[in-house]
Length: 90
Image (cartoon, rainbow, N blue to C red):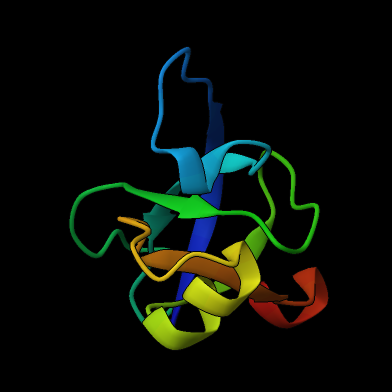
């Protein structure tokens, strides 16, 4: 698990069949301090209705994502699994 900030939403005209109907977000992983960037932005499957600027917890739990998408062949790796309270992130 890692914290990340939502920096945008991705739109795809062609995507893997397992991702049809899934909301794709672009997130910037953050360091433990909650402010410094930790690597390159990642594409995640949104399960929390997160929006631009939200700080979320992302997970690379493939089994959970395969079950969520009802597809054992999905290429997706990351998904949102929670929010970080903005009052804790000051």
